[in-house]
Amino acid sequence: MKNICLVLFFFFSLLSFGQVNAGYPLVDAKMAVIPANSTTSADAIAKYINANFKTETDKIRAVFYWTTSNISYDVANMFVVNFNETVQEQIARTLRTKKGVCIHYAVVFNELSQKTGIQSYIIDGYTKQNGKVSDLAHAWIAAKIDKKWYVFDPTWGSGYVNNGRFYKKINNYYFKTEPTKIIASHIPFDYLWQFSNYPITNGEFYEGKIEISKTKKYFDFEKEIIKYNALSEADQLFDSAERIEKNGLKNAMILERYEGKKQQLTYLRHNTNIEKLNSIVNEMNQAVVLLNDFIYYRNNKFKPALSDDEISDMIETPREQLVKCQNDIYSVGSVGSKNASNVASIKKSIGAALAQAEEHSLFVKNYLSKSKIVRKTMFSKVTWFGVQLN
Image (cartoon, rainbow, N blue to C red; front, top):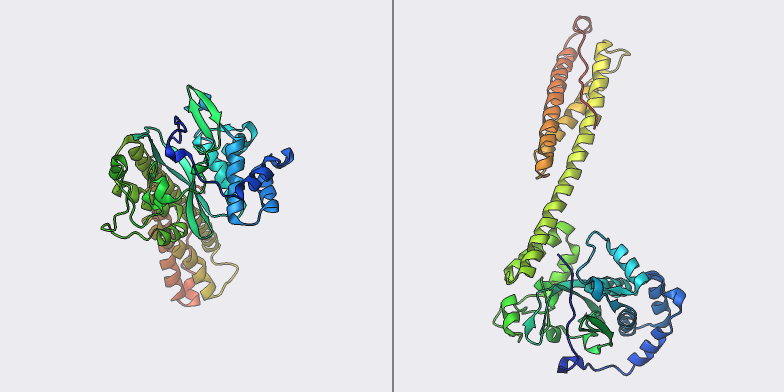
């Protein structure tokens, strides 16, 4: 999903004037004099915040103030976002250049928030200004402060763009905003992050119908967030995609994010299945080594002498491993069309190895049922089982 955001708004609406807590100027003043050597990394900034502030509200204010006052909106590169960068690379570059677009403000804010002990999440969605829905995606933050969820938009809170130029001006409306208020201008793609028991649909957002309607089915978002955090990455993607679809694929941005999550899920599942497949191949290779050890021992006419149980175990161990491999490989899900031929080859190798193991197992059972005199007459040279180890 392209996390590109264009900030084209002016501070003449009522939404622009937020109330500032009397204690915030003290926090802001302290953050304004942070030593330069404490701004080289997220760890250093967080360490300074933790050393100077104790409450969650003061810490999150420090995070907001530092992010909005030190990062400038990168107008020149607003459409040139490197999606191959990792989050840590995005953070490092933003701290170095002190420039970025919405996703860069968000990753820095989120990193600082979490390093100061505050539960927070990056939210992606789209926005509305002066009644007009933007056609560009946006990213902002949600954080739980004193057991209550609030929304923060460090991009919009840092200033505004006018005639292709960024003007820095901290806007406190976008600090610690109530979810019920921010929904007028910011709607997440996934309604889980509306923090509402009665989330609105994309259609209602377009129409400006943001009032809570208790005629809707109750949605316990607190429990759902706890559940979300306990899920695997694949299950998180699956559930999120379902919620996005359920809330209405109203525009191209929503559809792109929905398709993107499905693609991520497919990619993740393929990778997980390939890991399972590699594990099966390793187990097959181990079984083949044991099978060849048995063949060598059989060709040597079971010398040096072992007990009947040890001889039986010597063939049954690889045979049972190969049976397990054969069962497991048919339970592996899709690994993508490019790997289909490899899967077929592995199945064939397992089948061939198992057939030999079964044959040797029958020989051993027959051998052990005979007298010692008869046993000596049963040996004939057998060929080693050959399979290329992966």
